[in-house]
Image (cartoon, rainbow, N blue to C red; front, top):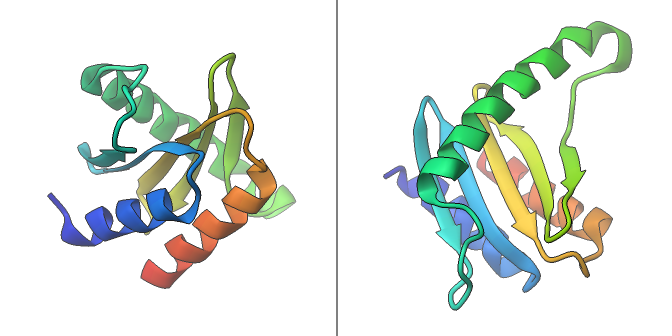
Length: 119
């Protein structure tokens, strides 16, 4: 397990109590943390499959860099959670899932600051 990624996961979980889960997926390896006391909605296998699909979607977003700029993050709202993805160090992705009663913009800014400290 990548110790730096583990530290990033810990820092992100600590930045807001409404964050349920943080995962960093890089070159097929998943480093992740779930808030203690919470049960994940997805199995580890389902999360890895979802992240591999997110890597593909992220790569398609980068195709329009020259026209609209680099993607910063992607946000999806589901019936039970928000899910935010952002790149880290080129090929990797950070996935954050949160409760619905969170201020998403504030949380994303906190996560971006943490991510930028490690890049």
